[in-house]
Amino acid sequence: MSFMDKSSQYVTEEINLTGKPLWTRLLYAAGACILGYLTFICLVVIGVAQFVFVAVTKSKNPELARFSADLLIYLREILAFIGFQNDRPPFPFAPFPGSKKD
Image 1 (cartoon, helix red, strand yellow):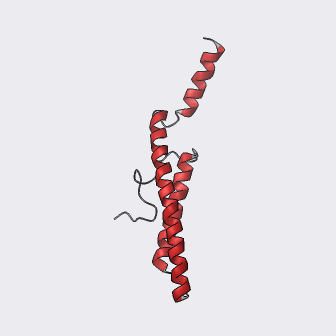
Image 2: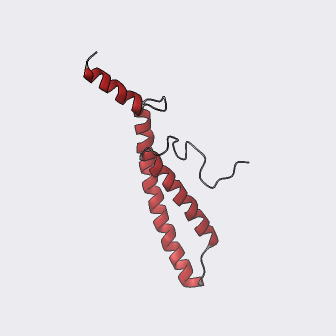
């Protein structure tokens, strides 16, 4: 066994820590990127709506504030998964942040 064979063996073992093939993580990450983009767009729309609400009523809408907080947690989970900080795929493969299990 040459040095290159040993080197590639270690890299494969380090990358495949969860026991799943790396290409499945790539597919999950690609889906998470799309969901993250859509989540970001939703947060911008909610921010504009909250701005209008505050301009008209002089107070924040608590439902919009709570929903945007959940979306921020969700966006953090997506980024953590894409950045290999977390091995658990985000929603829809796990519960949505802030959802209660009944």
